[in-house]
Amino acid sequence: MDFETRQDFTAFVGARSPALFRTALALTGHRQQAEDLLQTVLAKAYHRWGDVRHGHPEAYVRKALYRQQVSWWRRPMWGREVVTDRFPDSPGTDRTDQVDLSLALRKSLRKLAPKQRAVLVMRYLDDLPDEEIAQVLRCKPATVRSQAARALERIRVLCPELVDRQEVRQ
Image (tube, rainbow, N blue to C red; front, side, top):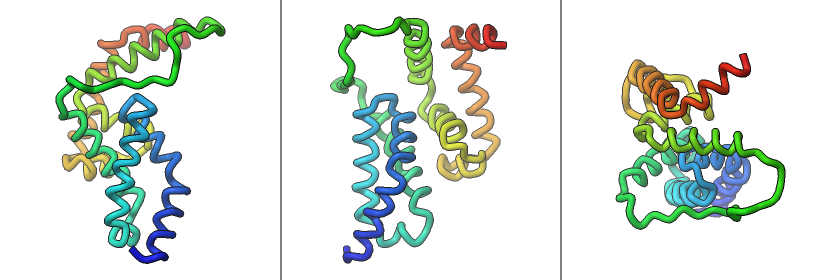
């Protein structure tokens, strides 16, 4: 890779890493796994940067994030570690209700099919239109809409605390 291409890649990573990391974090649910996911995808993109940089590099990297995460979802569950940066006991204000809701929502998101979770991340976090999501996932826009509807309905069933909380706010 020549100096100019390397500089272009470095500039892209510096400018777009925060947004790409948010997507990776939403896909994985864990900071360390998101870092691993983003690093893996950026390492792969680095090797193809000469071709990628002339098109839509961010779209390429986002698509690679989704596909790499789906690939990781398909790995066997045994042997996986969940790393955390929080100690189990920490003093502070009581946010039990927020923590409980967050855990319940995270648990329900993990129960979704990988495609449904990817659809929700791309639609509600990345704010992508259905047509782009369909291109990334290699399906029809109608499939994206139906997957999103099914995913949201499943979350409402799996996480009734979320529905109860929404009713309190209205």
